[in-house]
Length: 474
Image 1 (cartoon, rainbow, N blue to C red):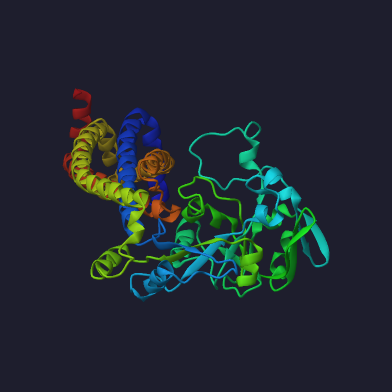
Image 2: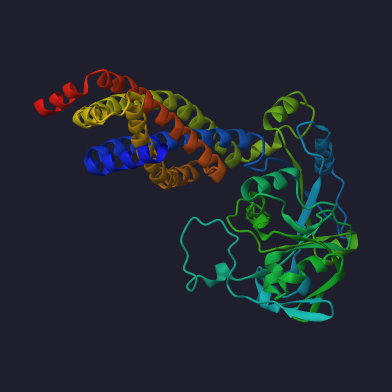
């Protein structure tokens, strides 16, 4: 008998005994879904723990706030010397990133009517000899939301702001910023061009270019060209060279929510970065610089810094109570999941064995006459066994197809709970999820087959006539 005929016989038998097949399928579905959810959740929380400590999920940094003198130069005091020493540690990155807010309201001397930020409607970008006027369509979405806001009633939260950062050095981002972006969004935050800058160079986000109405098909051509920015007729930056276009999702990283207003849940709407020399810094009213060095290996840093008691750094990044609380909570959650997982897995295994044995015993016991008939018309034992396996294969495939979206829904709920507790999501990539679901499905299928095999062998060991008599006696 060929495989197609076996599938036809198996499908007809499932349709004939749909109630028993449904009962067996429900058991396989529940077990597959629960095991998939728990396996993915367990994998996710362990990855969170490892990724937080390695700086992927949270950008651990050594940080100092440095003063800038009236000439736009960084004051070389103890904080500056301390942050410069950080790069000598193996646990730290090689980049010393010094950035500051450009206080455009002060530059324009319009504190009375502009308040804390400049509306995009007042800004103009001049590129290729054409003027591109800013658009405020209330689409600003670069904030951490803890509460629902009405776009009409709370328009000021969604106002498109125009602003810029001053980078007093070659780079704007630490190694951990780049790693965090790749982890959360994939790829590089630089869409076109490069991140490294020289004085007079700028980086600008694709969101800002969109709000200036600059054609998307010309983004790549803008690299290397000079542009000018004006606010309400006043030139802010003149003939600065565009070296890179940034992915605006970059401004959703943790760093941009803890700017000068430390601990704020809102970034300041700045999506232009200008590399400044002292004269430019002075013009843009830079008064305080945020200097950062990435901690790329948390555990190694703890050991290195504990052996450097004379150094004023001494785990200074641990002064962020939120970061440390997050590490402790994730560690606790990891220990709980690791321990509970063993008990939960044992319970699942026990329930699975009991349920499948009982369901399979009933499923196979109710079809003894049908099995006897197949044997009586000349079907070999091996073929009857294969038909039964094909039936289980169809049930398993249908259950897996249903269990994947169901498991994804449950995982979304668990991930939301984890985000509320430790500000980290257990969401895994679609590839990882499918791989885990596939492995669980194979494991459950093998388990069902192994349970079914001795039962079928026992039934097939009897004569066909005896099997039909047993069914009549029931």
